[in-house]
Length: 375
Image (cartoon, rainbow, N blue to C red; front, side, top):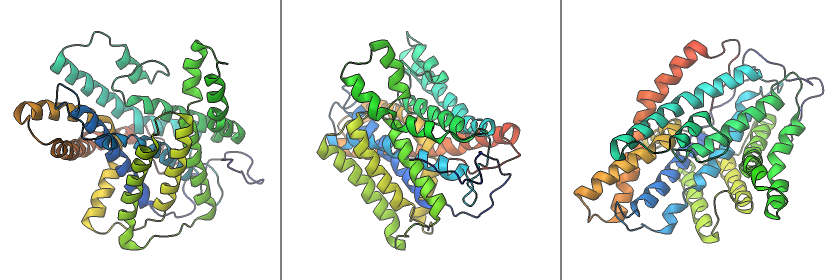
């Protein structure tokens, strides 16, 4: 995972603009969309089984889409590495402060909007919650404790990754070895914790800083570095590109179901991280976006963050209405309908709220001295 620095460039110098043209990694956008769709399917399947809705599960397999989170983590590591450094000089396009400002703008304000929407719908539907701490933890990305909505837990790790990456790779002197140690830390910490060598209170914080997700960020960094260094990836035949990515993403769910893998378990994260990295490698060979289906897949990739954050609230509303109006509907029809509508709602949220909000914040607060393709 070590990202070597050329001997003639020992520091993380900042360049004002890209010095080499780089193609748009279309396949990464497809994979983002597929990962978001997998998570939507899982939450829809799990919520359909709630007694207050339909009380029948569409099947355990459909609840395996949480592996989209593993794919997201690997993609994130790749994008941050690939978008931050110049491919010819390996100098950083942004300094630490500017990098963090851009990451903050991209992630946090829209996350706050979704948390407030989630809380507002909770108040309208079931009254004010007795405990507001999970919502405050979510707003602050507090490292320990329950958060609401639940999916915010992944953003805690995402933002920690940004901080560690920025402090180690974008300061005056690079400390790549610290980033490597952070990515590899779960390999040492988790076995020690499981053997009882870590106390309860220490474990709460160390579970955050040394989470198995670190490994997946590291795998993504490796691929970003490889693409920067080599500049070429085998390209898939045109008509096979999107079907192959869909097939491999489905295979990820099948493997999770067959092997009985669980989210957050180190052994399972290593398996899923490596599989996700291989899928990412295939995705890097996707170059075209010509027909309507592929354009739709690209839009879904662009909107994947909005889909990921807002879909549980949309699913809850849809199932509440559906269960009252058509309680005898086949659960597979409900699963398909809710998945499509919740995903569409996320795309609409992307265009109406997320995209304008980010454009406004970038226009007023984003660094102008240097530019980088943002994830």
